[in-house]
Image (cartoon, rainbow, N blue to C red; front, side):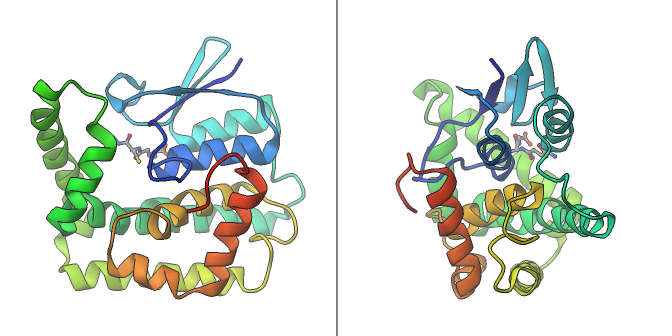
Length: 236
Ligand SMILES: N[C@@H](CCC(=O)N[C@@H](CS)C(=O)NCC(=O)O)C(=O)O
């Protein structure tokens, strides 16, 4: 059976990684049978989670995983027009290549309190003797990535202002629709849910979370997806 390697569940949300949550949500939305295998990124094909093993074929990166799921299993986007597909790709880039970095900043850099919560959630599976050393090294690496991306070069207020713009964009585009493109979930919903629940539904406090929680339509959207596709999990 198809195996999905991802971080262990924590915080009463499907996954603390937006990308892992995206893939599990896609599979649940598409009814693709799978087995979850808890993992850490060190052994992943691209050094990042999630990755999958489908009949011996190992694939890393949620975008390539979704391409594979679409061609070998179920494509959630078949009803979309070329224009909708273009918007879907652009919105996924907004989520995964921009808003994600503001969210990452809030976990790994913004406050020490957030870092402690993040550290406990990710590194608890490691033996106590190496936990702090690995966690601190990893923190440094992620902070370098945030700086390398460019997000980390801004002031804290600027980072959150940029992230809030993305949240406004998502809220405006969703409007009163059930899903981003109407009554049926598509890849964009898996991506958006993966990140949005990781901003508003986890115990990492930030102006980004506060802002997301003011968007009634996004809050209802997240609850709807939790209710429809994760009946086995507690509500955030
Ligand atoms: N572009 C990748 C991003 C995956 C990603 O950033 N995963 C993070 C967890 S949210 C990770 O494993 N990071 C480990 C690292 O950067 O060392 C995807 O779409 O899967």
